[in-house]
Length: 358
Ligand code: FES
Image (cartoon, rainbow, N blue to C red):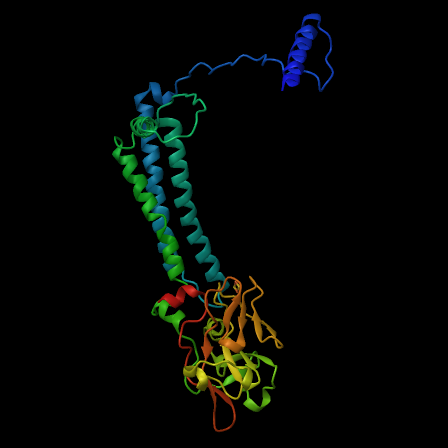
């Protein structure tokens, strides 16, 4: 330590000596010189036109609340446009009109809020320049009181409480703005049906034959060999005129055949399989990707999206990955002609776990 002090003193002495004699110092031995720049401070304050002219201030205020009311109009128009220009399936022109007019309304709603807030800040709020010194972070009563004072000052200077027309129009614009999104999401489901109900049921019902995806050819139990995995859809899906993809997205199933002795079935589910053939929803219970990879030696199903793995031999319970619950099982049986059929719909909602909570 003594040696360090000694070295430091020597360096300081060398530095003052160099400075005194204006000798060039090589990089690495130089001591940082004092900052040679003066703090220039703030430039002279220039009042805005709205600070000096009350009429211009009034005009700026009118501009701001007009923008907020325009935002409300934009949101309302987006909702109206969504209904006035409905999306018709197989009609690209209708989709384009719907998107364009809905988008125009949503754009106006968002832009008007943005422009209004910026104009409020630039033209009306108090024009004060402040220097905020760095200080330690703390939560002492004094600090909290200072924070409260900052909010009070901001309120006083912005006029948030005092300028009721601006404040109320902004609150109104912010409240109305999310409504187009609500309408948009509701519009994903047919108007005469309840979305949660739609997501809770599939096309499967008692007696529906299991068919090959995509041909729709019914599957005989005898044709499913041990170790195989078959992609399955309900018979009749291909004949649907409307909503074929929506139904397939819920009803897609994977069919596997194991040695019956390898299946570990709960007593209440022993009748849900047929001679080692089991059927599970293909829709991952994480976020709904198709579970498409089957490892026949381990009997594991893998979802390629986020690597969830399900154990087919144990009711497709999750053995790895982010999925929160097993794949729903479709109870199956065989009809008089030897075709595999469903005993019922799934007994729980398929897909992401959110729907399980309903
Ligand atoms: S969707 Fe299957 S793991 Fe994420």
